[in-house]
Length: 232
Image 1 (cartoon, rainbow, N blue to C red):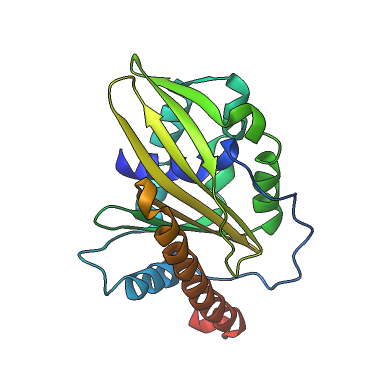
Image 2 (tube, helix red, strand yellow):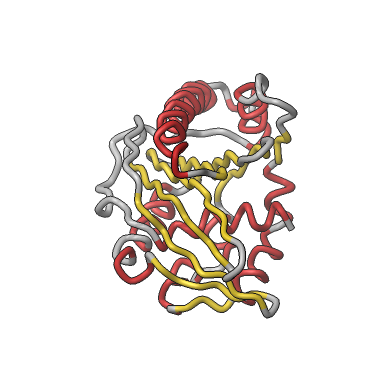
């Protein structure tokens, strides 16, 4: 179930403030297969404490469960589920996926084969902040209320979206710091718990992670794209 919820988190950004719809990117697309992406994520997080790299195959196998969870969830206002209108298989099925589960956070990457698909997803998130900064999700007879507070994060990616999401079931509450960054055909996501005093530090840390990972992906992707086909 964890991998399914991880995929869902890549799609839940539809309820926060984002930048205007991007114009077609002049940057080169990243061209990496699943094994190359897994290798990069393994190396990138090698200094972390017991990182667990989730392969494209594992994440893809959880798409039906993620779809089932999203369809069973009752979201109010219902328009805040607009990004769920297209099946998860349609939104992520044509992307190469990779993720790393760390001690208390997740790092996710989706490399879209068609940059226009990613552009359309980003566009779908565009006008919902005022109406969806507060919403509720009910699953299995339990309901949680969510409040999203936009944060300022500026990485080397073309577009960034970051927010602190506070959720409560009326008894307990928790906060998560969530980042989505888009560059050409690459979507990078970060999700980690947060407290009010840590937000500035986490924004700085997340910016560095995105910049460094994006640099690694771009370098490897361009090398892969120019390699003889017999070596792929």
